[in-house]
Length: 376
Image (cartoon, rainbow, N blue to C red; front, side, top):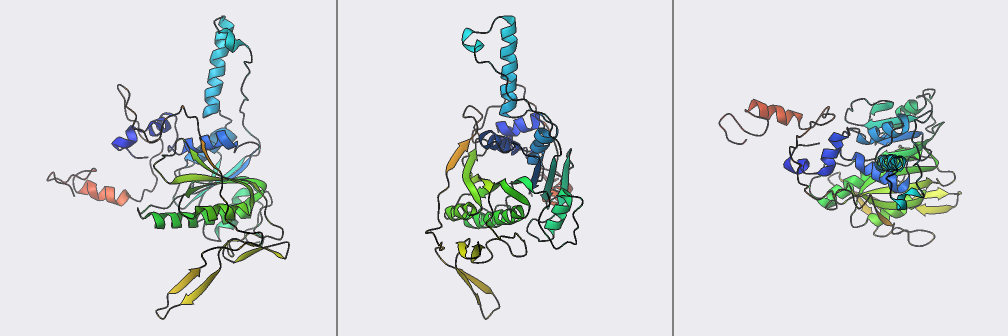
């Protein structure tokens, strides 16, 4: 998390540090859980692109430590206050009837959470951290070994003996400002996360990933609909409305019969996915390869995919989640009287800008000022 003037006036940025979250993105997962009950009956989770670890923090606090956080914490606090007023005899009549305790949270048994990222991540209680590339096939054996210590990495099987209930991915590329390019790279990152999820997710499981909404994103929704019963696009209140960011929430995983997940032959790399041996489900458009004289391979993609049951395009429902009375992520909230900016809960372990900061310090200052008082 940064320390710019905009950041300081961002209510979620300040709340994240006050509540001990590593990043403001923790509120996005909490608000998604409020709407979709992502953590109900969940004990085995994989968190992809996890660094700096705010989503893993949420998982650790709720599943392992049994803490009540987010809106559930607010409801519990409200109940305790109403109960105190009732015992004191000062509770208004309209609140006396129907006062019931919210569901209590407690640590769950046999919880297994694995976090994966290319960047190193500071350890968290109960979280197994892996420094690996989610696009590389060698990551699957590492993940299966982390989930089940009895798994043999030399085995040819890539199926988890104890599949996971939930796969999360909050990964995004370093944006360039070229929206078409950023959306394309993000979609490829999403496909990598999905293909890894298919290897470890149990039937009926859930998959949540960040997406960038673009021109043909409805094709992506339809492709996800092939392997998930429910597909919903959601925009948490803590996600800035000025951003194209959203989250795809896929529920009730139902892989087609005879389907075998593999990163060596990922979903979408072939024209069709065979179901029941004879029915084709198109997961990618018709394509052909042309090798030019200079050795460059051109991939020609058809404009419209074909589906045996009709057009594959399908519009997913869009749902805004998060209490409307909560803070507006796009607003610059006034700093309270006597505000003191807190340091980040967990400073970056290996920031890509570390070398640039060291060079700036050599030039005379960490904020771009040289010894002569001019900018660099």
